[in-house]
Image 1 (spheres, rainbow, N blue to C red):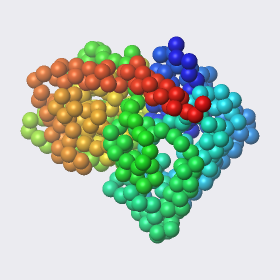
Image 2 (cartoon, rainbow, N blue to C red):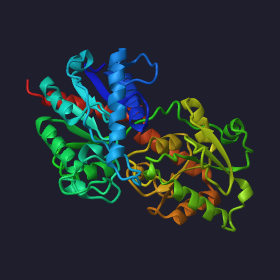
Image 3 (tube, one colour):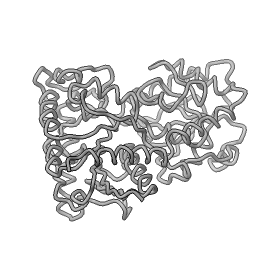
Image 4 (cartoon, rainbow, N blue to C red):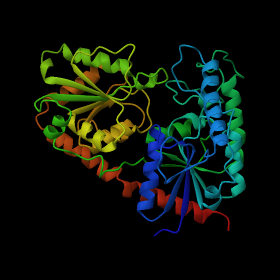
Length: 427
């Protein structure tokens, strides 16, 4: 038992990658004896162990107003063709009088956009005189508004001249947001946790947080849920013939998810289908996640759309049924889907970008294609299809997760950081 109370702050309860990572970490910490609780701004589910800041009808209405205002105002200021998430952070909610926050020995911040903790209410946390940890699940904390940066380096300076905004200039909204964050951060001491080496390097290069203490600690995953199954049996569940080579991907045709790189997936599959070494009738494609009902994409192989999968146990069996998981993401911190696939002993084929190389080891547990190179993505699929010892690649995928991302491993790393920060606080 570790005598420590931790409260995690996140906008939503498991809605999105950051929310899931937050809940998984809290469960892992509880399993090693730390008293860990999750407090969210807006609660979608019914999990009684997750605490809700917006319980009353009035509080809930205010939260909905803040969330929708942030989302639609950001769209109003952004260029119509822009598909990159952007936050203004004009609206917010104070948490310093919340009982869980007051009783905690340490506050752990996660994703707090969409009207939750604006710079003003972040700075207010300093009044509590508690150690604060902040895990960066995307780039927003050190930019003037964008969550995904691509090749833009304006965050190295003070933002401004933002390529995403309709009215862009040296003193535009991105620069104004940068200034508000700078003021808030100057009043608040916190320790940054970067889930990937790529994110840690990005923090180091930022003008807002380049001098902050940063630790690289990955997210975790439930290895007793996301686990290997006999592939032939898992394929039966999806009504797929056992001899088929199954490709799986999470298709996200959202207008705000350009960074998911869906077009590269489509291009890679069409190129693969034209290669003489690939018998098209042996390939089957399985897609989970959102489906564009208006403009369904055309794929060259037989395709099954599974839709949104809400039960992790079933999702794990879907991963296990696949022979390869393909993610064409163009920028991602430490995507849950990659870790989930590896945990189920399914190799991953992805671009060399973001935190993916922290998980995928080239030609060992998967294939890292050249950035934005659909042809190389196809090469990765072909490499695995023709591989004589697929079982060894599958075993290495599972070993990677058990050794580097298992709950006990990640919880112990966080516990060591927490205890050091608590000990370092002025007595």
